[in-house]
Image (cartoon, rainbow, N blue to C red):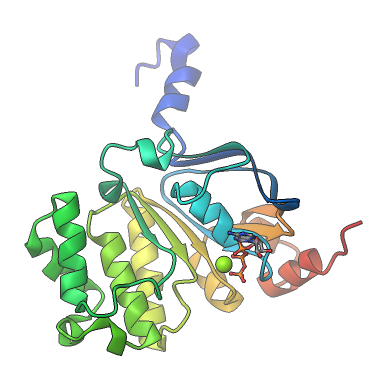
Amino acid sequence: MDHRTGDVRPTALASTRDAIVSVRSLSKRYGDVIVLDDLTFTLEEGTVTGFLGPNGAGKTTTLRLLLGLAAPSSGQALVFGHRYQDLDSPVRRVGAVLDVHDLHPARSGREHLRVLALAAGIPDSRVEEALAMVELEAAADRRVRTYSLGMRQRLGLAGALLGEPRLLVLDEPANGLDPAGMQWLRAMLRGFAERGGAVLVSSHVLAEVGQTVDQVLILHRGRLAASGPLDQLTADGQTLEEVYLAITSKVAA
Ligand SMILES: Nc1ncnc2c1ncn2[C@@H]1O[C@H](COP(=O)(O)OP(=O)(O)OP(=O)(O)O)[C@@H](O)[C@H]1O
Ligand SMILES: [Mg+2]
């Protein structure tokens, strides 16, 4: 950066630091029910963000809106400055795991990944790399209907990593993973962020979140109840669980 051009520096800084995720005044209603109410947050590169909140708070809905699987009632949910559906090659930019029960039951894990790769113009060699990354090679030729929950999570993660994206959007990926899988996931997410990626990961496993993320968003009844760096939220010696329970036990008027 040219330090002599002091006047234009803020603009340059803003453009090089474009948010990977930008959610602005996002609201979603289903009929008369307001599921998301005026949600605003941004995610920068190099961060792992835990997305927390009670059952029904609106986490999955937010992730679905980010991935273009549902339309906002108002506001915006942008990835790399665009709506997901307007991205050129979304699989190469955003890796997502939302519903691991939504996999084709009669396909093998390897076939599942090959179909994804073919659709995205990704070579089969990358399928083998992704299978190895999630340590699913031994089960790769078994039909997905015979997979355990943890194996489905691993397959979902392999699919998300296939296109070497810069953003990972994961809905409760720790659910069903064994301790070794959790440890792997933690290291994978940290490494992903260190290489300049961003991760948005929902979870109810607060102890795990506390070890993995550097910032949190706490959603409560469709509203952002708290957000910020983990070390700031827990600065006065409270655990993440204590902070979370204090926030989410507040009764809305
Ligand atoms: N397609 C839909 N039609 C009507 N209501 C919906 C629909 N999808 C979600 N909802 C409602 O939106 C609210 C938020 O659901 P959502 O799945 O986003 O919660 P969540 O935070 O992911 O919860 P959990 O922790 O249980 O996964 C719930 O009240 C749910 O019933
Ligand atoms: Mg959910």
